[in-house]
Length: 109
Length: 118
Image 1 (cartoon, one colour):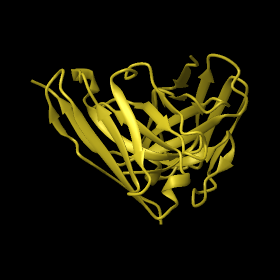
Image 2: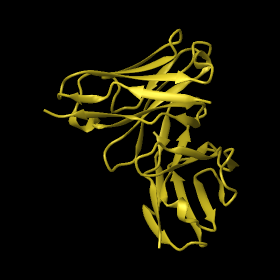
Image 3: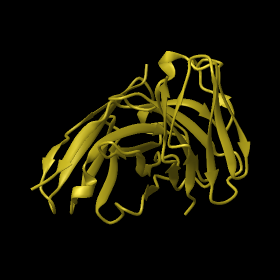
Image 4: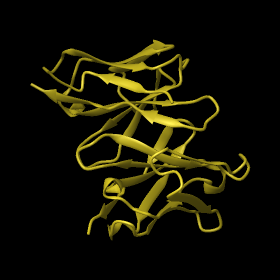
């Protein structure tokens, strides 16, 4: 099974800073990676699908990139409301299994 | 507007059973693939399993930790998704979410808490 290793597990940054979260797959997974944001006590929300496509309504300061085994989520200009935990997620091209990364907790300094 | 509402969570004993439900509205449920995802207290997200639409073949897949113990089913006439959990273990304690699934989990319910304890 494919493993998704997310890093860092947590970070603290100031408002306005650029923040990057990475996700490494244990083998080549093409571009089948999605990113979610989860705030405390709430269900996760889709941010980015298929590596780099912004979900409707998501601010343009969020972006995703990568291919193969290395993927990243970038927040360009961190805002107070971005304090949350972020998860990467892979789905296989046969739509059988689905795997999450371990999560990255983003805090505002 | 897509709405997913989970229900049926609660306390179960180790070795016991519990069934949680997810009532869907605002979209064509019978055409949708649906997944269950859980989150243990203070931990990350863990995919539990998926059921495809009947038109999509109706296949059901499970994550290794629950295979053989959990059963996913659907009632398209009632727009309800089910998760039957048997032989429960303490490590099954989690909030259980249902979500629409196209490889990407687009819409999520608010979750229902299942606690397995004696």
